[in-house]
Image 1 (cartoon, rainbow over the protein chains, first blue to last red):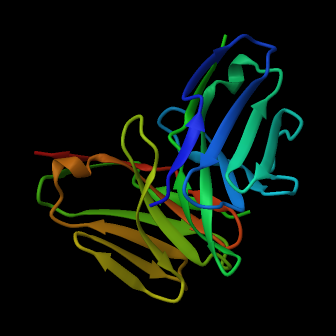
Image 2 (cartoon, each protein chain N blue to C red):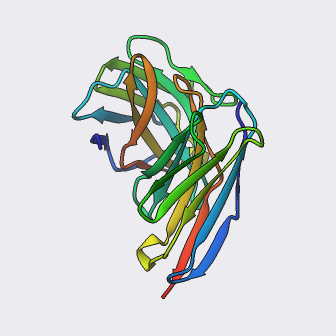
Length: 118
Length: 111
């Protein structure tokens, strides 16, 4: 399968600061990337769909001004958690979607980023 | 949006026995159903998937069945081994759209 990386793998930040997480598709061009949030022992919650060159589509209940997503190229999407609070502490996972004829098929996950806000 | 339910939340089986995990979905437009295995601290890995134009797919010890009328699909693992122990997630997607995940099943295979 395809290789997707995330950076950083773990970040600790103080409350009120902003944190940027990068998601890179290393061996294929991903027109669409997804961002998920996963709490301990829970499922993946889709936060937003990121399309290259256009604005991200956010799921209901996800604050777009707090979770800024930029998909500047076919291999890079970034998630910026602005004015982080302790309740934002979570595991954030991105995925890059492969497409066939413009239709999304499989998705390949990054290793995740653990965010701890103190 | 799509609502995916998954049962059971935990499952313990003896090594060599079969394990079955079931998921239901709400949006009849969903047409792609992948299953992921996530080991502790690792990323989810796709293990098998099925599209709405087929009713069953098998890959060695793993099989998935889909009932579009009832809107449910199931993962079957036969001859379970300790290394099958992990959390399994089902998902439903409208190809070209988002992926919605089930709540996960923690499978333990007892040697």
